[in-house]
Amino acid sequence: MIDSKRLRALRPRPGEGQSSTEHGVIPKGAKAEYLAASPAAYPWGTTRRYNSYKDFLVQRFGGRLQKVSVDAGFTCPNRDGLKALGGCTYCNNTSFVPAYCKPGMSIREQVEAGVEYLERRYKARQFLAYFQAYSNTYAPLEQLKRLYEPALENPQIKGLVVGTRPDCVDEQKIAYFEQLAKDYYISLEYGLESIFDRTLEALNRGHTFREWVEAVEMTAGRGIHICSHVILGLPGETREQMLETAQVISQHPIDSLKIHHLHIVKKTVLAAQYKRNPFPVFGYREYLDLAVEFLQRLRPDIHIQRLCGETHPRNLVAPIWGVRPATVMQHIEEALEKEDAWQGQLYQPKK
Ligand code: SF4
Image (cartoon, rainbow, N blue to C red; front, side, top):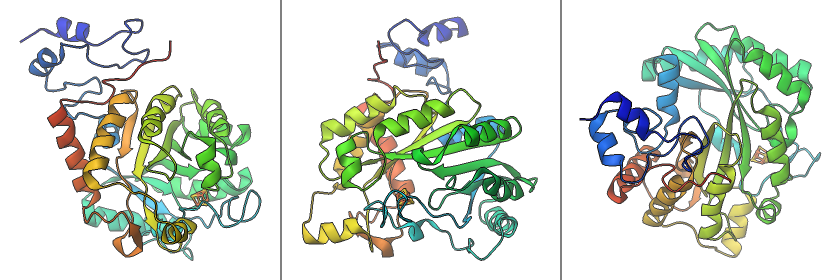
């Protein structure tokens, strides 16, 4: 056994070439000693080989937290013609809406129905209201307040998670979230999907990587949790580009990440393109290997919210693995174990 002083010494400090953040990677050669000395083996305080967002919420709130999805009736500038018509080529937002969430219900009613359902199903007691479908900051600020604030009236709701696009925020909206974040947990989820403008254009995303950087920089350091999404396996991107994605987004001040493998969903432009001209999609083992290598290159203090995509099988065109997301996560953990790999192992902070 080694003592706590030695344990602290094993955690890299800024300037040691390991990490410039509060957390960091375990120095080469010291992992076995570290593991043997503490059940909280990795810098994020658990023995899991990646920095799990679920664990982070448990640590922060002292217990399990569930997201209650709320459909506030938003659309998206990429669908209503402001930026484009038809939306992103892979998007079929109906596949995101849970059964208890009906557009005709008020926000209060949706929150109540969701809390009741999730309490019964998961025995959860604390919740976050998740404004998920479409772009949930795409309205004037006064209208946004009328949508968010009823959700926060429920005493079991500890905060908001708001999914949006980088081009649907401005200083006024961020200042409002900053105020809310003094009393609640506030998370903004910025869809990015790819760091390559050529891919973003092919997907009809209607924004550039630079716009994502600007939105993240505007939000950082204001008490707001910043999450982002990337998709691995987009047509035209190489394996090297996907791994470069982990390194590039690690240089920006995001707090958590959702990693999806590309799902081709029915009734989307991408599904039509795939039918006309099938392009390669991930085999299962191939994706597990890539996920391991991606995590190795990712900044260790980024919490991982997802490691694979999720679409109801009746809506999915490809790839069809027949494996549930929880099993994919478990297999990625097993692959990390087998390779003796962990998140941030190959992360290189920008000099
Ligand atoms: S920005 Fe989001 S909601 Fe809008 S079309 Fe793209 S994926 Fe769909």
